[in-house]
Length: 268
Ligand SMILES: C[S@@+](CC[C@H](N)C(=O)[O-])C[C@H]1O[C@@H](n2cnc3c(N)ncnc32)[C@H](O)[C@@H]1O
Image (cartoon, rainbow, N blue to C red):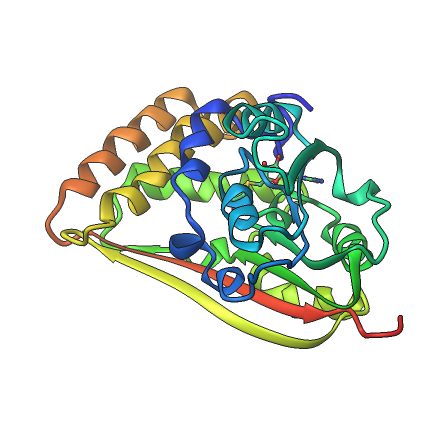
């Protein structure tokens, strides 16, 4: 995995993931977790949410996996092997996973958006779930995001972001496809929850939530420049313009995600 792969997460994006908690970023999963639930966390990144999952389901076994060895290294630095007895991490591609019928919950938060053949990934996730177990998928609809009076350099950046993703075979509106993807993977009894997050200037969480996009400019933006999708000057202009936009008294940002809980039918 290299910097040029879209699924590669540059170091500048690490803070996006380490600032997350289940409460502030994945409330649907949070309400499913009970002691002794076993969980596979697909695309666990630096493991911030995975550690929280492990603490909540203790003594249930939790496995965090990610295709990027740098992510697993970071996760294991934060939580060395054996530190939390019911938690392990490993490097792997979910599309090549051979888990079969193992987990009460198989979770992928904001991971499928980075996988071109998300169908294959979801099939493997469905297989990893125990019969009667649940698959939980949370992901973005990047096409629906909205910023109030966005400055032009930011709009230019965001359009280039969507184009760069699309050119890599990634689905910018994957949140809308989650129920169909789950059905194709043989999952049933679906529950769909839209997760729409609006933050306004003055909200306690505004700078954390809106500020994630500054990290996107600093991380994904550099990949976009390397791929020839954006000039470095445009990237820098976007950073400055977005930073200034965040200081405005009327700034409002809305981001759209959706979460699906689906079941592997019992006896299959
Ligand atoms: C946006 S991060 C999400 C991290 C974490 N789940 C969260 O919500 O903060 C997506 C993660 O998926 C991982 N990923 C991408 N493609 C993958 C694949 N085929 N198999 C496993 N992990 C993958 C990336 O390396 C990255 O760490």
